[in-house]
Amino acid sequence: MSKRTIESFYKAVSPPSKTLKPEEEVKPKPPSFTHHPSYPHPIATLPSTIGRPLANINLESHPPMKITDQPHLDLVYFHPLIPSPIARDLFEFLRRELPFYRVQYSIRRGANKMQINTPRFTTVFGVDATSWFAEIPSTTSDAVKNAESGSVLLDSKSHQPIHKNKYQYTPRPIPECLDTLRQAVEGAIGDGSPYNFCLVNYYATGDDSISYHSDDERFLGPNPSIASISLGAQRDFLMKHKPSQDAKVSNQPMKFSLASGDMVVMRGETQSNWLHSIPKHKGREAHKGRINITFRKAVVPGGTDNYYNYNVGNGTVFRWDEQEGKMRPQGTQGSVS
Ligand SMILES: O=C(O)CCC(=O)C(=O)O
Ligand SMILES: [Fe+2]
Image (cartoon, rainbow, N blue to C red; front, side, top):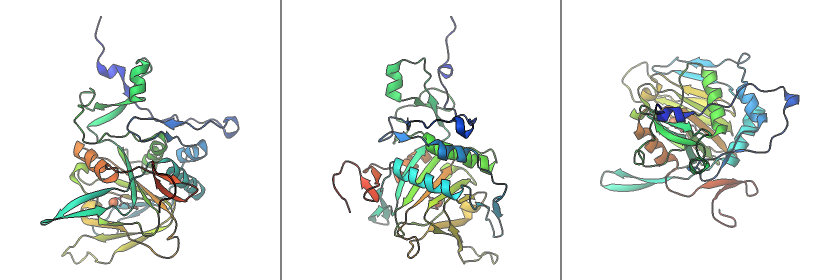
């Protein structure tokens, strides 16, 4: 009898089928969940009222704008990608269902060690291109299946389970709700490049922010493409060129007022030449929350550890508390201010 290779026991986690029945045939389904041992809690799957429109985004009436009129700038601006009622429902769904973190870490500045409190809530899912999540087929024994809850990490080249010390943090598969969005985003961009990471920021109020930075880490490879989606409150997105002697380079920042449902794709030489930020904000919508989702492709294991270190870390899980109208650390009773 010939031996079966390990690959033949696994198949890639396939996206949910896009062939949907007409509205009247679809019965309301009880909520279902994406389970995985790496999640602090099961993560609800999208209701069809959100999943269906995301799978059928039509950009014919408002095609994306290419913005390339500044040196080294290569943006594609979808204004919007997601129609506003769906964007609002998706915002509320993700704020309610995802685990969030308020990561603290320390950096060295010369001889001094400084403690940094990330000024926003964050979470992350995905794994770099050297590994992939494979579904455990139904022929595998129930005991193994339950232990792994449906998917296992394999090495992309050997298709063998990864070494237990490959990563410092346990990678989390992108849950169905964000994977449906990933497929919609990849379909809208249409350049055939797949993303393997999903980073989520939640800015609770105008006091939350991200300072000027570029996403040009080596673990993303040269000229990375980053797709960035906004949901909820409108916030300013600033972009400025890195310091340059070139007379064609302006030192004035560009400002985009990003609305719920908008997507900006930063690609080409943008990350190596430009910085971007979401500054603190007062005034209109400052009391309202905003979610930002970025899809990226990390190519080496260092990217996986970096993303989990700065977006999950080792701290408390926060969940949205609808009654209190704010994020609450899990495992605490009563109101936390
Ligand atoms: O919130 C945003 O729009 C930007 C987020 C961002 O730049 C990042 O997560 O790297
Ligand atoms: Fe960024």
